[in-house]
Image (cartoon, rainbow, N blue to C red; front, top):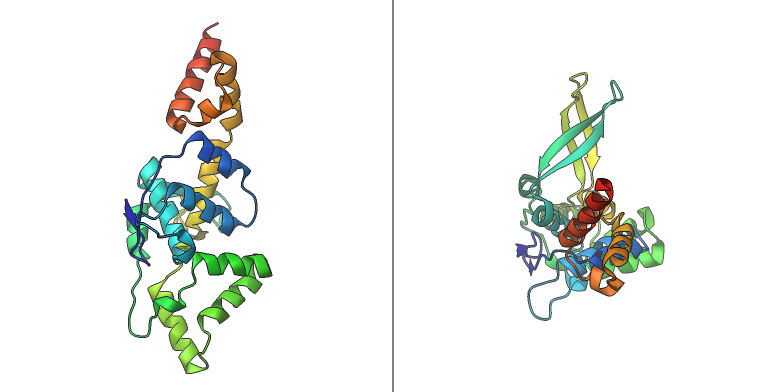
Length: 241
């Protein structure tokens, strides 16, 4: 169970099955829609009747980070390129610490009604395409009825009440020792990691079907860890020959 930071809604974290992996591998469309698709499957709202469509879109990346923490642990490694020596360096992050640093700080003037929902963001992307046009449309809808000073105050309150999780991270270059800074998009990071893990899915299905005669439906119903363990046993048998 994980409580979403902006909405306060609890979600249930699930271990992906092969069907979930296949869904991720075959899901197309905007990056935002892929992220939502994953949390709908693997981090569904725990409250009866609650749906992701009505929850804040910024909570999607928080759910993805929580899912990654649940599946693979709290520490993750992001790569940043040094602008001084051009070498790449690894930066280790704690998911728990990152979420704490990015926690919402709602205050005077903040209104939950102004926080864009998943449904609103996906609708804007469908209409305007991913990018600046959709972002402008989403902001305009959030600030509707405000003008001038009111709009600036509402925007500032919104940034505190529903902060984006993507942002700059800084560290030290392991090669030259210079200070380095990079952009970290947690949602993109988690989805990329998950796609890497599903890259071998079809090969694993082929191996298990060939060795045991199981149907694809049966293999995809296995937890990913068990499916991979069976595939490793087959690889070991082949190497021993």
